[in-house]
Amino acid sequence: MHAGLVANGDFEATPSNGFPNEAIVEGPSEVPNWKSNGTVELVESGQKQGGMILIVPQGRHAVRLGNDAEISQEVTVEKGSIYSVTFCAARTCAQLESINVSVPPASQTVDLQTLYNVQGWNPYAVSFNADEDTFRLVFKNPGMEDDPTCGPIIDNIAIKKLFTPKTPKGIILCKSYIKKQFCYPMIIMSALSC
Image (cartoon, rainbow, N blue to C red):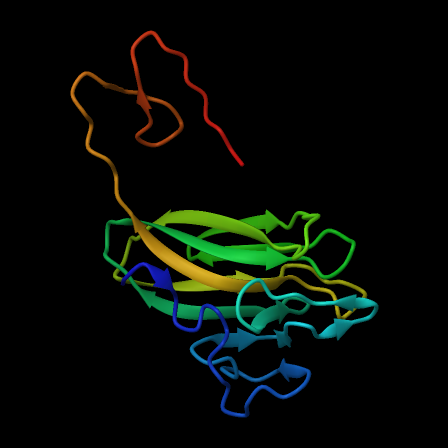
């Protein structure tokens, strides 16, 4: 597996039935390279939803996950390595929206934040240890909203193998909750987050 988008991670590959207006997918595998379950909608940049115009961060298409809907894909990796999955996500409604990212048996639910900029998209990353040579990457909307047009929109799904740096001479390996954090003796260090 090379670093970069997973197969059709940008959702720009043309489905067998093309990119029709309001391309709501109810069947299994209408989004190329992805299996879907529930209401999965291919959205196009500039598409209107109520009084709002949807913006896609890169390219022209992204995927919206309806109530309890999911998309998944089998990915080949190097067993025993650590990987990072990155993606962009945005909310479509004012209420709390979340997305569950899983590499079974591990999973992480991410509450989507409101980003006040032109696009309204946030980048996210999750990491995992590859216990097998292949894994099933799953993105699921765990919510059940009253408004069926609500649900997270995702785009630009990518994966990258992470390399653990070698310990340079004269540096002590900290025994902290952060895996392989390097600390200099007698210096207090803190973790930064963005």
